Figure 1 (cartoon, rainbow, N blue to C red):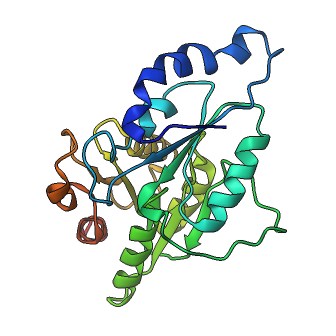
Figure 2 (figure 1 turned 135 degrees about the vertical axis):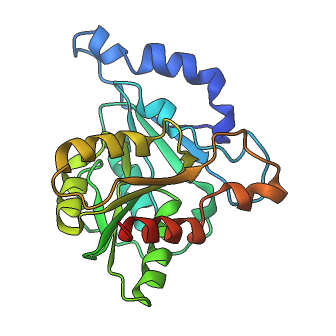
Length: 247
């Protein structure tokens, strides 16, 4: 189990992770197992500067041979780490820094689902908000606010960016017929783009609105005093919900 101190410090190791760690199993024709977990604290919301607040998960999710996950709560942080350690494949374990102070109950004798399996964090019928890591809590807050206006929002905690549990996303969208994907990372070429494309292919005749994405801007991470303008927050999520429901 390896820890990178901050998200922006991982890039000197990126070459070895991509060219060696991710490929060694296939290169050895399956004869070598690589039970390696790389912990990366990531994301903003703590008033830090660049290289301490970034969200590079899409750069790793793009690489075949790596599992890429991010917990959103205390229970998942515990169980997903246990599962990552037990995996024979290398796992990039993104830890949302702004959630380090969150508290929650952890049942240590529970049997969790598969590491890559998405979880319905809140059931709803009008629209699906799909998120992972730090944005799940924001989406739950948005769903609660929308409920006051009579809107029933389902929140799907993806938990894994590679592989992505597209079956669970599809099942939710076939029920709600609308999807908004939320992540802290820039929208441009982010994981939300792949989810939007795949769900459009799978659910074209079920969708009543285009799949929308909410995320960071395609710009270098700003100084700490400006990060609240950069990070997707409650208002931007609710705006996307309103735009989707308006179709």
